[in-house]
Image (cartoon, rainbow, N blue to C red; front, side, top):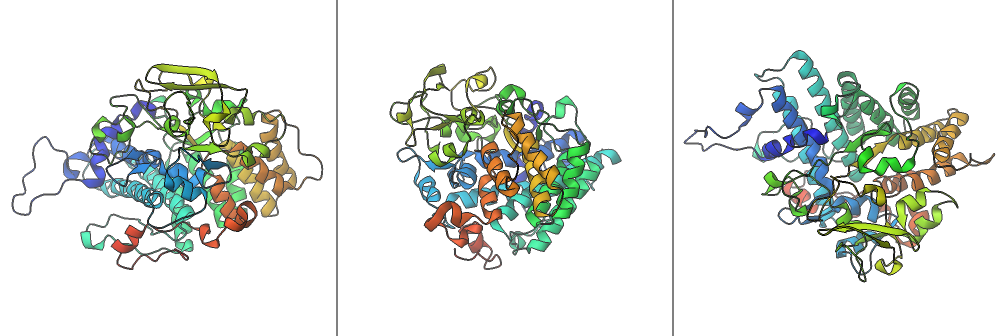
Length: 512
């Protein structure tokens, strides 16, 4: 989808379409409206891309809306035992969330909620307009409906993982006074999410042409059916879905683990679903990546990954913030000789790479740049010093976020087999495949497979948005965090603003 990212810029108005004066219902001839826009296949493609764009906003930075600063990283990575908020360079909310101080009034929970339901709204808008007067063929309508349902299911799934019983938004609600929705039950959510993914699997193509790289496929939908059933703990359904993908799908483990994080190997054979960052096109100012910003027409939809994660303390080069850093606990989790450690984490003795407006920077890594003596290297390093990955002003990069990889699916498949009473031999093979790919030996005979799977997932997926939800799912919060743990943390709070807007219709999660 890098090649078609520019379509996002012309449709980012879709969440706040123009309204007419009650007394003078005249439309300027140069203005797009819902009546004039939803006509051609290109129009509908653009509207679908707007829903994808809401995912890009998860990591956005904007001072105009909620004052977001990479909030999704805080929710999914900084809060875990893998990462610490830097003692000097991080903001207060990062430090609080690192200490498991979670409050309904804080920005991260409102930012995620807003972006999720914006994405759902945009998907629902496409579904509603498919039945209107337009130039679409029946095949167009089938594919677009399937893609919109994939996205609606994807967003609802994220909301379920975060909030537990979030509202179910399956249609556009026109009345301004009827916008508030109540909590949905888990059963209602699982039914709706699996129904949408099933329809998506039936209607989406198995692959897209090169001009549409990154769009959801039927195989991605089938993969998500398995993943959702893991969260539901419907092990037979999860095993069935994963078995089809593993045995018949198009995915494979890349021969080199690090290829999953290189700019020049995006959307590879291991990628099930990844978030596309398409620039540079125009303004590369990280403050306008968020497509709800008033200058969204200039946004190039990049990601400020280096800005937040590259070393930023005690004279570190590049002018980065260094807000968050790997923990010693994560470092110690890697087995001796595991190459994923040096691919994922800078430590003393490594060659360090970053960049600023003056260009690329290379020098020995100095542990004093980080309060943990460590800095994240994943998505960075020498191999990502390539043309097109960085903006000229040194603020942004365009390397995609890998969200769902085949490696994770294989580990989820192993988990489903272990928990569901399936073949332990097949489960062990999935884990060994992940280990063998990086040159590690098979598991020793008699190894506890559940423990091995959980270990492998932590080191394989470090700094990807999964660890927190695994801790919750596996019920190991007290084991990981000790006295800091509070059972209320099994769910994030609904944003206080949403509770207030709903007039009591939306019920807050316990403990907040």
